[in-house]
Image (cartoon, rainbow, N blue to C red; front, side, top):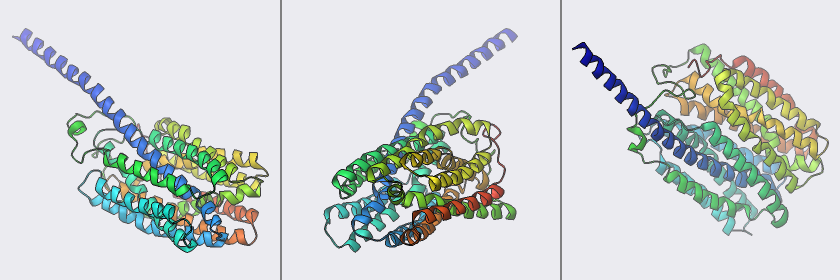
Amino acid sequence: MSKWIRVCRSMIIFQKRKVAFSIRPVRSRIKRIYTIKYTAIHCCYWSICCSSGAFVAVYLLSLHYTNSQIGLALAAVNLLSAFLQPVVAAVADRSRKLFLKNFFTVLLGVACFFAAARFFLVGAPPFLLALLLVLELVTLYSLQPLVISLGIRINDLGVPVNFGFARGTGSLAYAGMSVFLGFLVDTLGPNPLSAVSVFLYLALGALVFTFAKERNRSFQDIPTEPDPVSPKPSHRTPAKRPDSSGKRKFWTLMAAVAVLFCSYSIIGNYLIQITEHVGGSAREMGIAAGLSASIEMPSMIFFGFLVKKFRCSTILKCSLFFFFVKSLLTLTAANIASLYVAQFFQAFAYAQFTPASVYYVRQVVGERDTVKGQAFMTGAATLGSVAASLVGGWLLDGPGVTTMLAVGTTVALVGFVMGFFSIEKTRTIADA
């Protein structure tokens, strides 16, 4: 009798192993498919941010706006999107739909309409064209929480897409688009920028709409396995609310992020003026922006290794320090080559901050409020960009580029100190 029991147990164990072996290739294939889809979405989204956002100063200068007026336009964009992003995130958190494809594509359609209007209304009054650009950018930047939520939600369903690879490839697409548009604008002027954006909006809409069915059983019916990179199930990472001390630190960190991104956005918003200050043109500006973005991909992919070895809170602190370093090197740049060197430090600043902030927010605020917490992080960065737009434009029309960069470097140092003492200690992924 005992012999038959041992035989039956052996058969059961064999069957379990056989099922597990058959599941792994299916899960691997699904993970690969959705990582490719999610990567394509990031590529299109950040390419649009390049064609519509990175060259906004170039476009408005061609309409004969002053630096202060450009600053006001950028401030309006950032301020409106800062208020709209938490609203979009709240809709994402409360919706019963998994991927919010209809909501996503409607917002994309609105942004695409504004870009198409700019293209077909060439020669219209400058105020109308500037207004269309502001409305387009507000809508575009408000989509960022939804782009992030796609990756978070499909991870929660047991398909661990590689966020670092997707975001890093998006930066690489941004880099290629930046170099291409730099040559295009230097040759044909800024008018073709809106046509490029329209094409990218259409491609992004198609990708979002076909990303996944709201009730896709292709991965929901597959038993999940523990993944070493993704956070463990909800009973190990409860959606608890932080205490009063934790809330104070979180909001202090939000203030630090706003201050740091004021410095960061001064460089990004007025890169064309900085490039011209050291002897370059729109072509060199495109190369500088492309270099900064291209270095993000290997850095973000390397983050997947770092986060297994170090706490994401430690990585986040280091990234804040390198925001200051990049600002200081930009201030001291005397020629195009030294400006390119300063852009290289994007790999240690923004490229590490982006994935580290996602992991950090998830651990600090809990799974239930992850999208909302990330929206607050994005909103803080956006508010910093508001200040950068206003102060940067005013300083450019007054004291000049050097004073603007000196103020930005000082602000970056203050933001680093605030952030260093407000970041809470978190677990490594292996301990989560």
